[in-house]
Image (cartoon, rainbow, N blue to C red; front, side, top):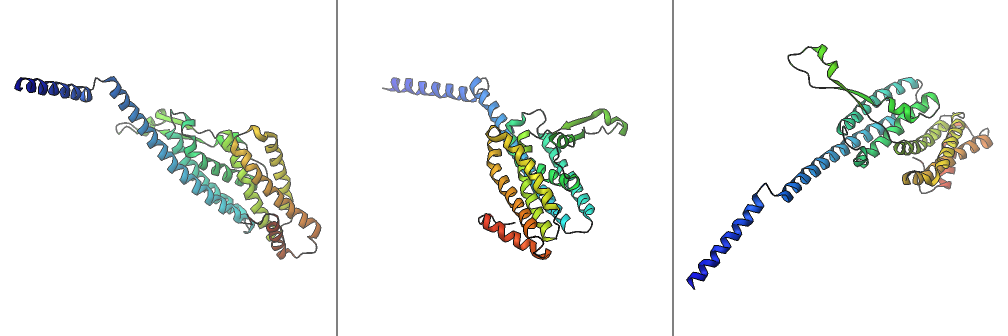
Length: 283
């Protein structure tokens, strides 16, 4: 009995020693492979979270720029507001430069969902500013042309300032066509609000300009139809609502504009808009 017990305990010791060698041995190809996978996934997730935070900052600053631009209908000198909006958008572009740094050498579509909301909001803000100044729609090429960033490597303490340009690196960020289309679709809602503000201030020319511009955008989205991204077809309904409200404002101004005092035009238009779409209302 003692001999058998001794043999059994020795076998257990050998088996446990082999298990420890397999688990602790760095030569195990399976364990080494999964450790590499773990590091890659951790690095990717950390980068994804950083991009989400940057995108959130881009969204916030872009919204503030849009709110600022709505003041152009209420101030005597709109150029001061537009210049202030330019400064804010320059800050937004610097944040987008941080996104370009994070995406250096990476596949942009692996992280696209992390920053797409911020880019769409930026497109909406920059296209709104461009329309107020030029009464036209900014192109995708014009947006991407301003998203070129110069980054320099860390300066050598022994070197001079003249040695920095050779170490400079150019980073570019390309807005995807889908983000551009979604940003333009959101722009129509801001133009509808601009129409309401213009009517309230007695401006009867801007609503007709906006109506024609929104029809052109609607026609362009109609050509895309169901062939574009899924999100574009969803926002087409909102675009049509905005166009309908602006056209209703133009109808009211054309038919009853001479009968209603200027200070009451906004109230009449708001009440008609509420009857058309009581759920959404007027912002």
